[in-house]
Image (cartoon, rainbow, N blue to C red; front, side, top):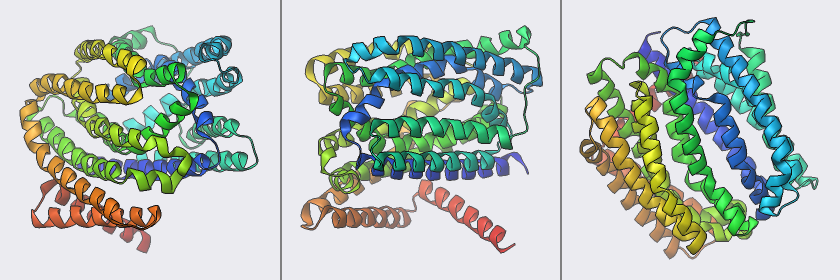
Length: 486
């Protein structure tokens, strides 16, 4: 199988993994949201920044460094594995000891036992990183998809059963914990890699030279992405944090998952072609155009149908989150542009530039935090929108120079997708206003009208991103059917 076939196969299985995984998580989340009140979702949301920061320290950029390296030895893998494990033990101990102080900070005593249990996820993931890296380097996303979906389903079932038997917030805790545990156990069972009794300082220094800058960048980014949980949880109500986290699930997850699918498959592939700038630019351009087409159209529909979507899926108790869903869709649309432009810096080995940009951008984020504390959540999200535009300008300027694909050219390429998304969103929103029926019927009609508009306009205008994606879907479907026949 050549590189192109392996990439397409990897993207296909990564997409299957993402769609199935997110689909299961989304379904489980909807069921749990109908049983568990917003306040208890907010409690789990308060712990996110602490577990996320711990996870960033444990990885320390080593996974990206290993994936990018041309020839990885068993010594490289084992060295990073023991580092991950040591950091996992250290940060679980830190979380365990500081759990009481965190609970006091938020004035939520129940956070103390919650953090001590959720902290185990940090330790479990330290066993999991190298197994995932090994499969990613082989572009083996088929096995990753099977393991990920199976672990999500099993943990989801456990969470639902616990929720319906009255365990409340502990249903969310156990669901997260068992999801991480099943994922780790299945990776170790099905993947053949095992660590050797070796820790190479030479390997450590070589990988850390690249990964250390990504570690600092990752810490800055993790703090920025999760500090809103801390602000809302500290200065507003726990229920308000629950509304915000639910809104993120509806508005940011679609584009984030689409981008993650592409990133994790194409990063090792693009790293192999990093010296051929013309080929790299072509691949990057295709990624930008295809990803933004999907995310623009999808999130325009989510924003337009947010009312019926939220009420139908999670119920009236979550109505206050509708406005957050609509506002967060714009940053969600921008996510692929940020992530893919920054990916080019990693591919080209410019981790020092990656770090510099992260520091500059996050300095501009300080006013967002102040606005959130003073004027409230809605104005904070407006500030996030402005920040996203500024970040895109900085990211695309430098990546554009490296691969000769500047922001102006990117904007010209993505403008048709944006216009199609706006047109679709307006029609879908109007349909929701005009229809006098129930929220469920409105949602179904809005969904079908959105699909019909996108397909019809794309076919009539011979829209290139649409036909590119259509060709991939059709070819992979035919291949899948052939396999079934055999």
